[in-house]
Length: 88
Image (tube, rainbow, N blue to C red; front, side, top):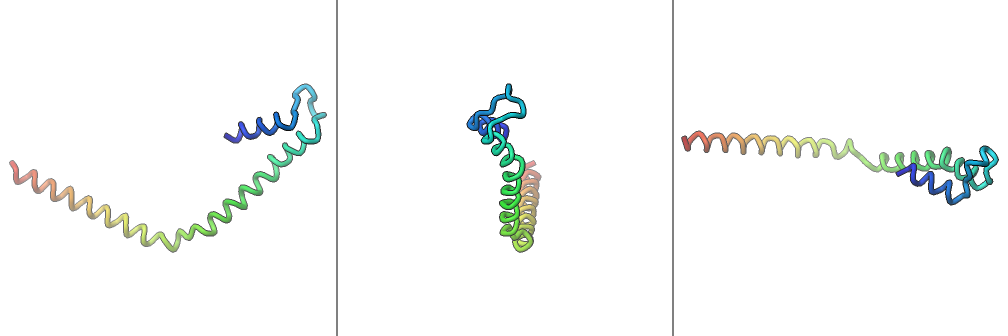
């Protein structure tokens, strides 16, 4: 996915492989943005997402829910085994 965006950006800024390092300024700017600006923006977004995640607040309730599901499954299996035992 990222490679497609990178290649599209190079094409849109008139990148020409034959020019080597003598690329148009738009190409140089695009490479600079991809190399430096994009990771900074991505890290800022990661920080914002993780800041509002509040996993510590929700984790105990999530663990209780999982434990209740496991207990319910175990009881259902035990009841099923008990029913099958009575049939024989």
